[in-house]
Image 1 (cartoon, rainbow, N blue to C red):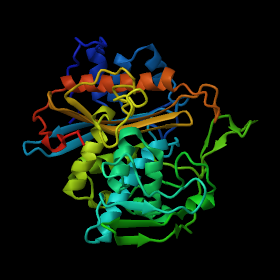
Image 2: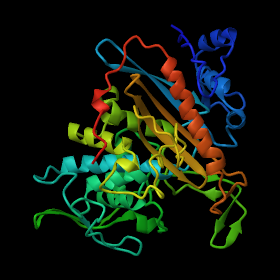
Image 3: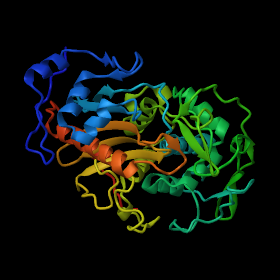
Length: 436
């Protein structure tokens, strides 16, 4: 049966415009279509295309009209519940292609965090959990030893504290320490075994190391009350990297020199939008994905993740952040555009992991409105680099990317507020205290 369009609310701050009835009837009677001007492997669903174009401002329309220039990809997931509360999902795509490369930046911290939690469970060591103090030794410049963490309530590093920092402010060092705990080889084998076959995590973040250096993982030790619970020696990944040919841009800066050729990303991290979204779904709705796609987590892990992923920086005491440096919505791109003065809706929580680097901005999110009992998932990636030169730090993040993500999130949210549901969701599972 064709999807029936919901009535779009017109009395909104953004003054949405309704597409014509004839257009809607034509659109909703269609199945997924392929973008005629973008090659056969890019997919755009007519419903999402109509929804976006009907409500986009001039700047957003420019991006929608030139998806290749902006390397744009969007996936919007409608969630409906049955009488027993079981969710079903309908994915809509705009210019989406799992083989189309974008640099995922900090979004890879999501699978790194999940893999670290799973490893703790699989070790099955009494007394060892995500809160156990974790000490890391140094093996090379750029990866110093870690024996304390002044941001933690007890002053000690742990998997839990690293994960909090990953989701609160996208902390790079925290992700690198979990990358070292899991190990490069084990991390990628785990993800590929779980069906995330196009995801490759090949290097630490924000540290310039060689390929060989990134194959090495620092020694790690877990101790509690002076007793060593687990000691992991230095590890090395001998596995060959996948053969890829991923290039971006027309030039890049290396040192102080401009190289007039595309920048090679073939040995950099990769994570397609659809796979990141499935990873998020496996956390928010574990029973909705096949068992092989899930991570080995327990209910305490899920509650912990819901708190960490949805908390704003002003709600955290350990770690505590300067609001001038990390304002509350600093990692909430969808709906808020990471604006310093964003008006936070008190009944809405965003469980997300964004990333931004090399002109790419990406965000993968589950949005829940506890007052209106509305929920949806949304993922998008955008390349804002007008001069096509990388490593020059001349990107249009503030001018192009952030406003697009803010409007995209608000557009879908307002549409969801008006979309009729036969059964309203029970969102109590995700209603966790955001005060640590």
